[in-house]
Image (cartoon, rainbow, N blue to C red; front, side, top):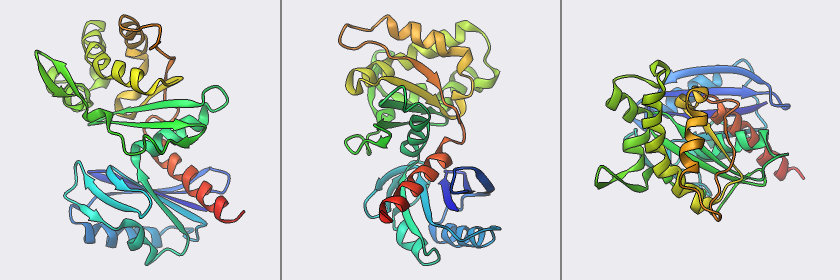
Length: 273
């Protein structure tokens, strides 16, 4: 069995996978604001799983991390700083443990699904915020592992603003008073993808991906805006920055835990070669 832990700003999802990658068990709980309380509750949940003998574990964190040492440095929606997640889990887990950024892990999962067709993948999650994962040859690209394109500055309404602040799901709710699920008219979606294009064009020029995969809460509604986004991006493409295929994530809202499984399994197999 392999253990996956997706830590979110409001909720944490703990999941187990069989060796072959089948999702076996899931437990979700509210993420405590204080880190010591979180670790205590996480241990209780893991020890209460029906099968808690693991070959490997992977923890997804929503923020800037020290990947090598498994330390969460800074978090967007949690008051945690410099928390030694890997060392703390070692106190009650006897398997190999890896820690990575949640968007990286979601991207890893989705890139593995299309690896026969695309080797250089840009995964973009659009939910409360915007996160990205850049995957090359089926692995998290170390050159982009700590990148945060959602925090790039773009010009909008005659001033520089953070891309996430004007383009994330929370920005959509603030602007229109509706979540993506409740927006059905093309006029509104055209306005939204026009804003998205500000950031996507910059990412295309910088990363030059073979494909863009969109996930997250807004990603589940891809059919409403997928073609509109592609058409908007084509307006600004150049011979050196062509617009790649844009597709919907296979597991738009569970990609992170599947990515945890892949990285946990990879780490275990590398240590047993």
